[in-house]
Image (tube, rainbow over all chains, first blue to last red; front, side, top):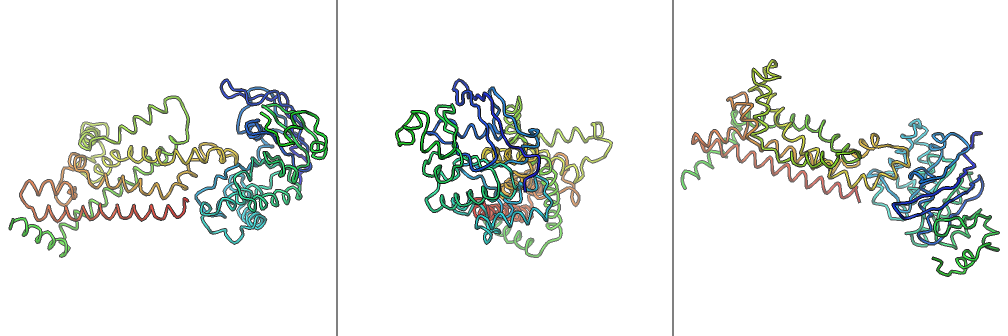
Length: 240
Length: 234
C-alpha cells in the first residue's frame, strides 16, 4: 500500500508549546520512523495529548519545527487521528465512515468499498444503518477507529483511545490497533496505562512535565529505563 | 351570551361547509407565510450556521444585533418595506406595494433574524463538539456550515416552525404593505382585525379557529420532530 513518497520519518526539533503563561511542552525533539507502534507515555498532564495535537497540526507550536519527509500539505492528508472521546456525526454508522472519505475526495464507489471493509475490520458491519450516537461507548470508539482506518492513513494518531472504556472494549480497541499496525499503518498513541503500553509498544517516548525524558525501544525502556523518573514511573510510583 | 354562542356555531358552520371566502383567505395566508419562510430560511440558516463557526472581530456585536432584531415589531418592518416599495421608494418601480409579493418580503424580513439567531444558538454547541474532529478531517469552517446544517436538521426543523409561527401570526407587517384588499391581499390575521372592528364576529371567529388550529398543528409537529431527533442525536 505504501507510496514511495512516504511521509515518515517525522522529525520534531525544539518544539515548545505554552497556553498563556503555562508551559506545557518544553524543547521536545523527536524522530518518529516507520515500524511498530510508538507509545507516548507519562503521567496525566505530562503533555502527551498536546504533543499529539501539535504533530497532527491541530495546534500551532509556540516555537520549534515539525518536519515531514514530504511537503506538509501532502502529509496532512496521509494521517488521521482518533480522540479520547469519539466525536460522531448525527448520522448513520455508514454515513460517519463515508464523511471523511468524501472530504478526501475519494470516489464514491471506492469510498463505499473502503467504508464497508473498515466497518468489518472493527466488527460493526452489521450496524452500518444504525444511528451512530446510539452505539455503546466502546462501539463508538470502534467506529471512530473504522472511520480513521477507511482513510487508509500512513500515520494514525490515537489519543488515549481506551481511557474511558471497560476491559472488554479496551481489548477490542487494542486488537484493532494491532491489526492496523500489522497492515503497515504507523501508530502513534498516547496512554497512561503501562500494561497497555507493554502490550502494544514497538518503541516508547516517555514524557515528564512537558519534556521527553526517554525515547527507546519498548524492550530497552521496560527492561532498563535510563532515567530515575522513568524507573519510578514503571514501579508505579506517582511521579509528578 | 346568545350572540357569542350563535357566532361560534356560525363560525364552525363556515369552516365545515368549506366556505370559499374563508378557504381563499386561509390559502393566501399559507402561501404568503410559507414563501416568506422559504426565503428567510435560504438566508437565515446559512447565516446562523456561519455565525456559529466563524470567529472574527465584532462577532459578539453581530450576534447581539441579530438577537435584538428577533424582537423587531412587525408594524415597523411593514413601515420600512412600505417606504422601500412605495411609488417614490428605491424599489417603487417594481410596483409591488399592496401585492402578496410585498407581504412575502415583509414577513421574510421579519423572520430572517429569528431563523439566524436560533440557528446560531442551536449549532454553536454542536460546532464546539465537532470542531477538532472536523479539522482533523481537513474541513475548515466553510465546509463545516453544510455539515452542521445537515447534522442539526431535526433541531433546525423546530427553528423553521418557530419562524413560520411568527410569520403566520403577525398582523402589522402584512396589513401595512398588503393593504388588506379583499380577495387579493386579505390574510387571516388582517381579516380577523377587520371583521372584528366591523362586528362580523362569525367570520373573525372562524378564521381565528383555523389560525389556532394551524399554530397548534405546527407545535404538535415540532414535538414529533423533537422525538425523532432524540432517537438520532443520542
